[in-house]
View 1 (tube, helix red, strand yellow):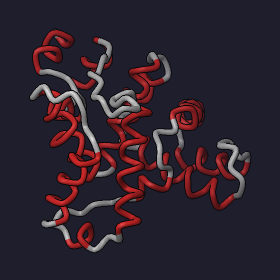
View 2 (view 1 turned 30 degrees about the vertical axis):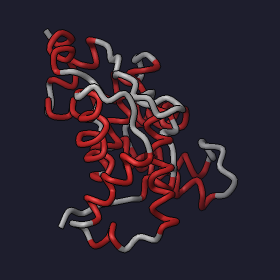
View 3 (view 1 turned 135 degrees about the horizontal axis):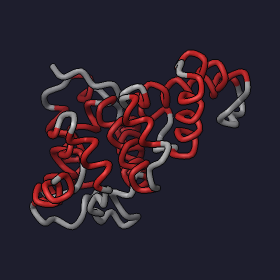
View 4 (view 1 turned 180 degrees about the horizontal axis):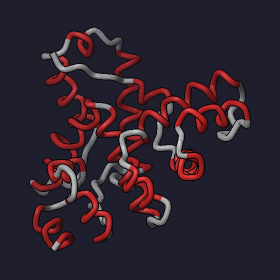
Length: 203
């Protein structure tokens, strides 16, 4: 049975500005534990309570740990879109459910020339996954709604969906594409992008 961690709803969005601050502090400190301490002690994320700072900070660090040091270094000099794509990549690596959503639904619809990804598409995807996973099958309707809301919010924040749920092609730079090509090329499936475009970017 696939193991799905669904704590991405704790942050509920991409939180790019907060992640940028955390990456900056990691590059300075080179220690995730020290960054976590600063998030709480210095209230880096401007949270209302220490418990909130700890919960959100922990979740964001968990995502960012999925990026290599080379990827984190590139994040610091990357353009706005590439930063969003890197955070989306980290999220897909961190949460299997969203990684499968990206590859099996977002990417697949894009390359088959489907222009949108709506709630009905997501619900069908979720139903298929729930049929094979007891944890998903036992989620309340409210929790299912929260998962869907968070997933769509994150995709919009990453500039992969419009507010009208139209799929936006990933316009990543050559630098980012070549960086990703050094790792698992299957991770390009997390993005709405054609194989021919990937080949052109990394040549």
